[in-house]
Image 1 (cartoon, rainbow, N blue to C red):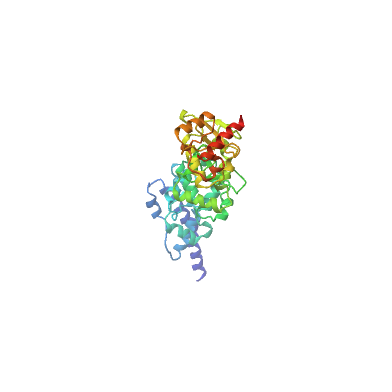
Image 2: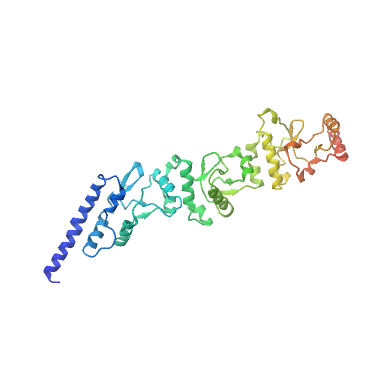
Length: 380
């Protein structure tokens, strides 16, 4: 190429880069107000393969619009953002539309752009590649976001599902740390942390959930989608995070909130479930005895609390030194006699047969009757 040809070539290149490309940017900015259809708007963008000199022009167009508000996002009711600040919608997530809605409500500049346009950004100018919505990006975005509490339950649950979607059990405590996304039974949300750093929250089966309804700030909501509940069960069993399954000792630690103040270490307390105001209720006690029998918990675990119902309208602590008597097999006359003598008769309608009761309850036979009577006599 002679000198004149090179000058013409340089002139044409500079004309495309410094004049036509900026003019095309202005055209796009003007077109935003002329059409309500983003499909039509994006169809006017140059995409595909181009030969020189047009490839030079297309490359420069994508460079100059990178910091201009030419992509449409639904944030704030509909706003135009630049490719530099935009985040591409995650089409691969199974509930991508719900996720996008939640992120937009939080002010995250999510955009939906034809893949052909995204490909051109990547092809011509790697520094101008549009970022994509990803679990790690959402977790980072939520770390400093104080308005998360303004979202509804469904949106928070979709954020929880998405933020967990790329994590192994070993990484959950570190990567989810500080995110208030643990759905609780009291309709609030607990904060994720590595184990022992914050309050621990508990996943429960249906029985545990009903028994612990009074401590909804510490148990995980069972009304969430089953897939998400199963995920939280897996986390509780396999991760170093502040979510745990229930066991006997954990169940016991909630007793001060399940029983009236002052009941701990009381040998006997009045209890009238027919009044409708007693706490715990009759249904609670039936469920409690079903639960501890199912899990074969040692009754010694609950020895500080009055848990044995008596026909006299009292609850007694389980004690080998002062046993109740089971009278189901005895005659009505014998039951009446034992009651008049002051024997503590087990009210069996509130509890199922439980093998450990034999340590704290006499059988309804001759030996049991005599031992029960002698026990009353020894107290006089």
